[in-house]
Amino acid sequence: MNDKYATSAAQNIAVHLVEDDEAMRQSVSRWLALAGFQVNTHSRADPLLQQVEPAFPGVVVSDVRMPGLSGLEFQEMIYRVDPDLPVILITGHGDIDMAVNAMRAGAYDFIEKPFDAERLLDAVHRACEKRSLVLENRQLREQMQEMGGLHARLLGSSAPMSRLKR
Amino acid sequence: MRQYDGKELPPLGLTIRNQHGHEIMELSGQRYLFGKARLADLDWSVYYLMPYNSIEEQLDWLLVIMVVLLVALVLFILLLRERREKLRSRREVEEAARIRTANKLLEDEIEERRRTERELRETESELVQATKLAALGQMSASVAHEINQPLAAIQVNVASARLLLQQQRSLELEDVLGHVETLVARMSIIVRELKSFARRSDGRIEPFDLRQCVENALMLLDASIRHAEVSVQQAIPDGLVEVLGDQLRIEQVLINLFRNAIDAMDEADQRVLSIHVSVYASSVGLQVDDTGEGVPACPKQVFEPFFTTKSSGEGLGLGLSIAERIVHGVGGTLVAENRPDGGARFTPTLQRPNNE
Image (cartoon, rainbow over all chains, first blue to last red; front, side):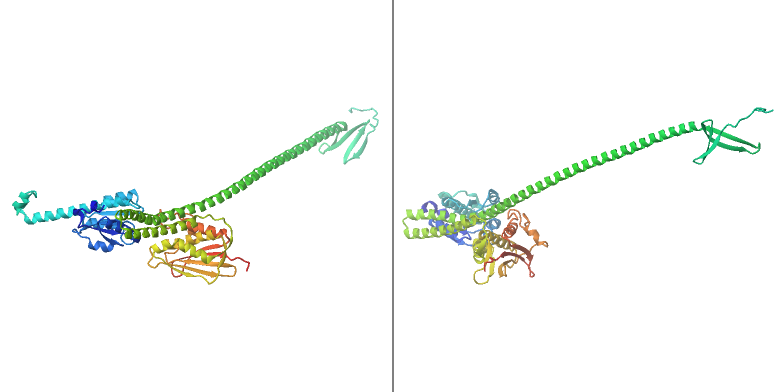
């Protein structure tokens, strides 16, 4: 199980869990940690919002109904900072409308409580992979821009190409 | 030359009598009405004789005509009277018919009123039922949330436990199981609360301790009070505070009043629910004060069914109406007013048992 999800791509991506219910926070963080993820827990969304920036190396799993900033508001704010930062919303009383609106607003996934633990794990795993790829992609693009000119025209990363670029 | 010249003229043997102011002349057995006129310029006197018989005859006729007329008149009067009688009797019949109709209408109206009253009673009990259902609806929404949280946590914990079991990490497994136990206990409390709420009331009016009732109501609303960050202040005299009523129903009254207070303070900066019990000679008053917006200018309005200031979906507006009904049902009163320093005050007053 651990091996299944602790893939190299998602290794450096942290899962930020936002949940006001302590029991829920504890059980989900333990489950994700057991699955090999690096988990940070938060009881409110507001403080975490400060940390969010385009290069944020993590994904967010958030409850919807919370004191202060709600999960939906939090997700929209994150989307404005970085649309490619996956936010998985969990709610105890979601309806179809809420789910559709959240997905339209750019949520990565919408999970209704109570949920199958594996389902959450799967979503978190995909989200981490996506985040990892997005960040890698951005990094490569930046490198490419830095190198400019000739390097931009030499495509691929095969051994001869890499040697040529060097 | 004279007509009767040389003839002996014997007296005619006439006599003149005065009868009823008329001069009557009798001549050879015949009676004549006797009239006399003087023609001055000729120096003549004209005597006019009219046979009395014909006058009598005429008089007889006159009499007959008069009798006939009299009879006709009498008949006419009788006819008139009869007609009037008939008219009157017809009117009486009509009157009687009208009274009968009126009676029928009255009876119908009475029946209608009885039916309306019956329907009202039924509607009232339906209202009680509807309020119960509405309260249950609200409650089940919050209960669904309250139960969903531990349920979801348990589900995740079970997945973790299975993983730990596979990896034979028994210490951590123990920890997870302990966690599950706590969550199960949390759910049992909720279920116990629900069961006490759902318990049917037999409607008996008997003495009970108001303090216990207040505590039960506050306990049932604990989650809402904490969630709404409302502070509760209580001032209940020491010792047993006995009132008359059906404890479960009065508990529902208090729940409705407290819930109303909590909801009313939703947007207030200061959220204080004060419960103040005053014991009088024959009754006990329980003031429920909040620091919300207060009640409308006509406070009685809040007891009207379906009166609500909440947005749709947050309540049917039956809570206070049902509270008033229940309090009235046990011989108490429920007054709504605004406090001098802002916020609303609801005061149910209940009777004390009079065996002391």
